[in-house]
Image 1 (cartoon, rainbow, N blue to C red):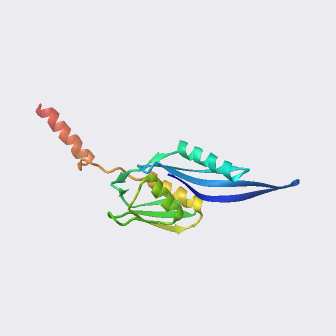
Image 2 (spheres, rainbow, N blue to C red):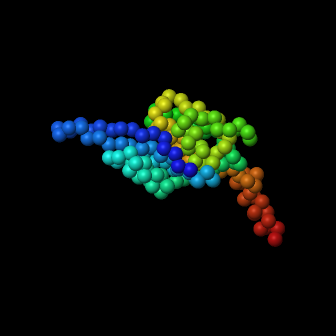
Length: 160
């Protein structure tokens, strides 16, 4: 899944005149738990998008999930943006703003509740969402805490 979030026109004013370029923010994901983003600049829109997609594919990260939602509630932050991510029950869907929805769709998250606070800048919102997803803790499948698990292993070794 590849999604262009925003395209910005940038003008650099020099003594020779105005130099025009474009920046593209792109989110890429495999919809199976891996997602990445990139912001690239070029003199043409199509080149900027192509560069951003290539860089996003190089910088993908794994997202810890529990079924089709995230493992626990977390707040991601970047500059002025703050994004609240909450797990949701099956059938809820993705309740999110545009940039956050693109990241969740790319990661394969199908049930999540989100809220953007402070800034609506798409670049910072995507970075804040990725920050929150990167700090998610994995689910302990066995159900045992770390200390209890070690204790069980020690008991098995001493009794053998």
